[in-house]
Image 1: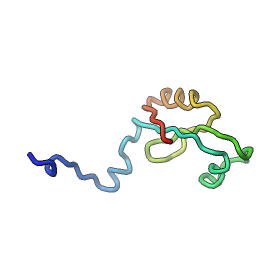
Image 2: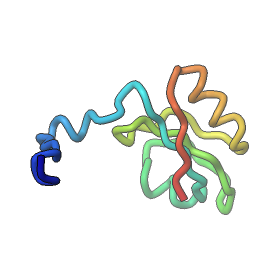
Image 3: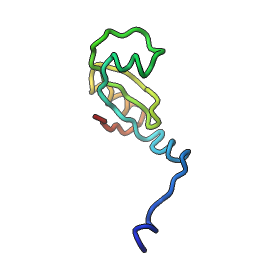
Image 4: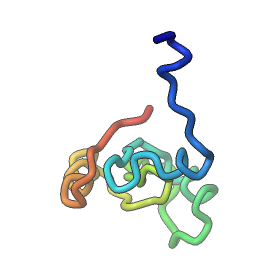
Length: 85
Protein backbone atom coordinates (compact mmCIF):
# COMPACT_ATOMS: atom_id res chain seq x y z
CA UNK A 1 0.00 0.00 0.00
CA UNK A 2 1.42 3.40 -0.94
CA UNK A 3 1.53 6.41 1.37
CA UNK A 4 -1.18 8.16 -0.69
CA UNK A 5 -3.54 5.22 -0.13
CA UNK A 6 -3.19 5.56 3.66
CA UNK A 7 -4.47 9.15 3.77
CA UNK A 8 -7.95 9.88 5.03
CA UNK A 9 -9.95 12.69 3.47
CA UNK A 10 -12.28 14.73 5.68
CA UNK A 11 -15.02 17.02 4.54
CA UNK A 12 -14.95 20.56 6.00
CA UNK A 13 -17.89 19.61 8.25
CA UNK A 14 -16.13 16.48 9.53
CA UNK A 15 -12.97 18.48 10.15
CA UNK A 16 -14.92 21.12 12.10
CA UNK A 17 -16.19 18.41 14.47
CA UNK A 18 -12.86 16.63 14.90
CA UNK A 19 -12.14 16.16 18.60
CA UNK A 20 -15.55 17.48 19.63
CA UNK A 21 -16.51 16.23 23.07
CA UNK A 22 -13.05 14.66 23.50
CA UNK A 23 -10.40 17.39 23.38
CA UNK A 24 -10.24 20.91 24.80
CA UNK A 25 -7.40 23.32 24.37
CA UNK A 26 -6.00 25.75 26.89
CA UNK A 27 -4.05 28.85 26.20
CA UNK A 28 -2.89 31.87 28.07
CA UNK A 29 -4.50 35.03 26.77
CA UNK A 30 -4.30 38.72 27.57
CA UNK A 31 -7.52 40.28 28.86
CA UNK A 32 -7.27 42.95 26.13
CA UNK A 33 -7.30 40.20 23.46
CA UNK A 34 -10.43 38.73 25.05
CA UNK A 35 -12.26 42.01 24.58
CA UNK A 36 -11.46 41.87 20.86
CA UNK A 37 -12.32 38.18 20.37
CA UNK A 38 -15.38 38.03 22.62
CA UNK A 39 -17.05 41.43 22.59
CA UNK A 40 -20.03 40.19 24.64
CA UNK A 41 -17.93 39.52 27.74
CA UNK A 42 -18.43 41.68 30.80
CA UNK A 43 -15.78 44.32 31.45
CA UNK A 44 -12.45 42.74 32.49
CA UNK A 45 -9.49 44.62 33.93
CA UNK A 46 -6.98 45.54 31.23
CA UNK A 47 -3.55 43.89 31.15
CA UNK A 48 -4.41 40.63 32.94
CA UNK A 49 -2.88 37.33 31.82
CA UNK A 50 -5.63 34.69 31.99
CA UNK A 51 -6.08 31.06 31.00
CA UNK A 52 -8.87 30.20 28.60
CA UNK A 53 -10.29 26.73 27.96
CA UNK A 54 -11.86 26.18 24.55
CA UNK A 55 -13.76 23.26 23.02
CA UNK A 56 -12.17 21.61 20.00
CA UNK A 57 -14.35 23.79 17.74
CA UNK A 58 -13.10 27.01 19.39
CA UNK A 59 -16.15 27.62 21.58
CA UNK A 60 -15.04 29.14 24.91
CA UNK A 61 -15.71 26.94 27.94
CA UNK A 62 -14.16 28.89 30.80
CA UNK A 63 -11.80 31.66 31.77
CA UNK A 64 -9.58 31.63 34.86
CA UNK A 65 -6.42 33.15 36.28
CA UNK A 66 -4.82 29.75 37.00
CA UNK A 67 -3.71 27.09 34.54
CA UNK A 68 -4.56 24.34 37.03
CA UNK A 69 -8.18 25.53 37.19
CA UNK A 70 -8.50 25.35 33.40
CA UNK A 71 -7.05 21.83 33.43
CA UNK A 72 -9.38 20.74 36.24
CA UNK A 73 -12.39 22.10 34.34
CA UNK A 74 -11.40 20.15 31.23
CA UNK A 75 -11.18 16.97 33.26
CA UNK A 76 -14.53 17.68 34.97
CA UNK A 77 -16.07 17.80 31.48
CA UNK A 78 -14.32 14.52 30.53
CA UNK A 79 -12.17 16.37 28.00
CA UNK A 80 -8.48 15.77 27.31
CA UNK A 81 -6.73 19.13 27.79
CA UNK A 82 -4.01 20.21 25.38
CA UNK A 83 -2.01 23.40 25.70
CA UNK A 84 -1.53 25.90 22.88
CA UNK A 85 1.11 28.58 22.95
